[in-house]
Amino acid sequence: MRVVQEARAAARTLARATTDQKNAALRAIAAALEASRDEILAANRKDVEAAQAAGLSLALVERLTLNEQRLGEMVESVKAVVELPDPVGAVLRSWRRPNGLEIRKVRVPLGLIGIIYESRPNVTSDCASLCLKSGNGVVLRGGAETFRSNQAIGTALKEALRASGLPEGAVATIPTSDRRAVDLLLQLDRYIDVIIPRGGEALIQKIAERSRIPVIKHAKGVCHVYVDEAADLSMAEAITLNAKCQRPATCNAMETLLVHEGIAPAFLPAIITKLRAANVEVRGCDKTRAIVPGLAKASEQDWFTEYLDLILSVKVVASLDEAVEHISRYGSAHSDAIVTSDERHARQFVEAVDSAAVYVNASTRFTDGFQFGLGAEIGISTDRLHARGPMGLEELTTYKYVVYGSGQLRQ
Image 1 (cartoon, rainbow, N blue to C red):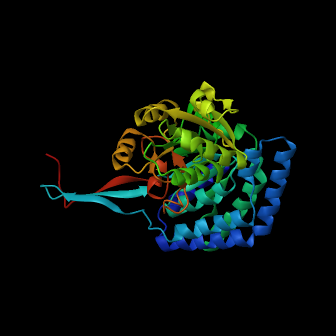
Image 2: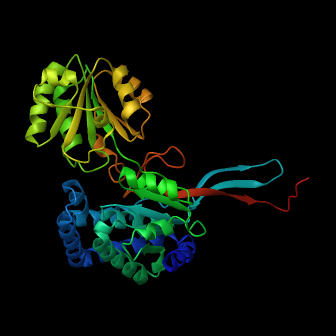
Image 3: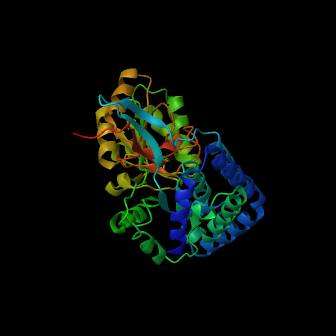
C-alpha cells in the first residue's frame, strides 16, 4: 500500500514535468541500464535457472531470458522514446462559442497506471519509459518467475530518476513475489486509475474478473496468415516462416495458416517441409493431411489455441470468405494477414477482418510498438475502447476540456 500511495503522489508531480525534464530522466534510465548490465544479467541468470529447475516450459523460459543483445535492445528502446513527441498538453481541437468562450480539448496523462505482466523483464523498462514520457506514474508487478530480474531493473530505474530530479516513486516495482499482492493491487481504485495486464489468457481473465479498477486487456494472440489463390508463393513461404518461426513465443506470432484450395497442392508440401526443418510441429485439417500425409490431425481446440511455441495448425479453405469466417470464429482480434497479388481480395480481407492489426503481404510479427515507430509499447490491446493495437504514448493519455472566458455567465 505504501508503495502505491507514494507512486500516486509522484504521479501528480510527474504530470507537471516538462518535456526536457522527462527526456533527461529517460536518458538517465538508458545510462543506468547500461551501467547495471552485469547486475541485471546476473539476476536474470538466477531467474532462468530457477525456472528450468521448476520445469517451466521452454517457451516461457525463452521469454524471460535476457542476454547482451536483448538488454541492448531495452536500452535502445528507452532512447527511442526520447525522440518521440511528448503528447501531454497537445491541443486536439479548439473552438470558440458565440458567447465568447474558447474551448480546448487537451491531452493529459491517465494518472497512475498499474501493469501486471508475466515472463518478459524488458516490459519493466519499456513500460516505465512510456509511462514517464506520457506523464504517468506506474506500479509494475511482474511475474514471480522474473522477480530478481525485475527488481534489478527497477533499482536502476529508481537511481536514474533520483539522479535526474524527478520523484523516484513515479516508477514503483512491487517488492514481493507473493501472488496475494496482485489481489490487493486490484482493489486500490482510490489510487490506481487503470490496470493493464500482459500475459497468458488465464492471467488476463483473472484480472478482468477481480479488478475494481478499469482494465485495458491485452489478450491472447491467435494470429492467422491466409495464403490466397492469387498469392506469390515464394513471398507466402517467406512470410509463413517468419510469422511462425522468427520468435514463436510472442503474441504476434502466427498460430494458424490458412491456404486456398486452389494453390494448396503446390504450396503445402514445400512449406511444410521447411516448417519441419525449422522444428515446427504441424497439425492439419483433413484436406491438409490428404495433401501431406503423416501430419497430426488438428482438433477443434487447436484452432482456438495460442501455442506460443513451434506448433502450427494448417487448414485448407475453399474461398477468401471461408478464411475470413474462420478468423472471425477462432481468432482473438490481434493480428491477421493475407498474402495476395489481387488488390480486390486484399481490400476485401482488410474490410472484413476485424482485428487490431490487419496485414497485406507482410508478417504478423510487425505488430509491435517499436516496429510501428511508436518507440516502446505498453502492450497490444485487443479491446475496442480507449486503445487498440500497440499502445504507445498517445494511448497512455486521456483528455480534458480547458475553457477560457471573460466573465461569461450561463443564463
